[in-house]
Image 1 (cartoon, helix red, strand yellow):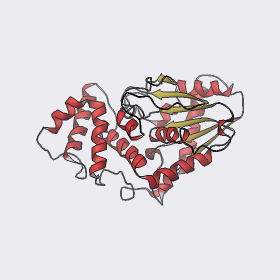
Image 2 (image 1 turned 120 degrees about the vertical axis):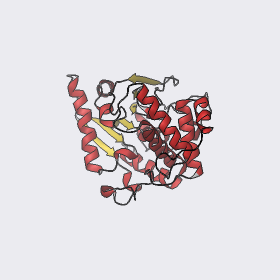
Image 3 (image 1 turned 90 degrees about the vertical axis):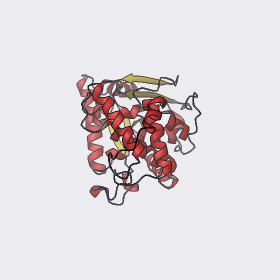
Image 4 (image 1 turned 30 degrees about the horizontal axis):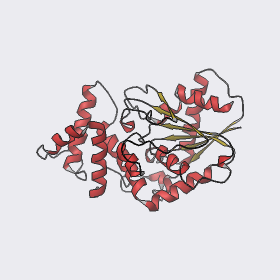
Length: 293
């Protein structure tokens, strides 16, 4: 039996548990079908769905319920974290130049003037590269940064989320697939002491995709000093799938970790962070099939 547990990010959670689970399972099976290989064992999939911990009525999640909506003001600490994420992506010299520029009325009023200018800078850089994403690239990085900040610095959210994911893991779980913020949650859980009993009996596979774990800002928040590697996950075969155009990955994989296998994909120009595109990619399919044997 190949049992896969999926861990989503905040962005995939607003349509309800059943729909997200069906989308993920369908995308994974489509990817396997596209490479023309048949699973040798029975297949099952479950989604560790935790968005209801964020909002009491996820089926009608709107801006007024969304703690990271553009209209929700940032605290000073949250804004500083977002700026650090942009610094990781754009470089210190670029951010210093933008900090010295005169204030402009750009973007949602809830964002600080500096964050608005950083969004404009990253969007301009993206367009100069010929990219045609359907969403603001800078806006996507802001939202991803706020997702990660909320998980890492709001303990009353983080612990219940890890508990929910842990309850979905069982002795027969062979693969964990985690996208975006879900990759941070999955890694944080698996490296800690909250792993369910029986988890360490046999080798497992972790597949992260669209992961922000390559950002130094995120790694520092997890307790790792600059220049150090992440803690390895004993008994876990870790494959990381990324697209260089995906701003949430900082445009790079996790190849600084000797125990992580990076797989680069091309998700196109419109939405390189798309969970569905990652889930149906060839490296995803081949990693799942390898774990099947």
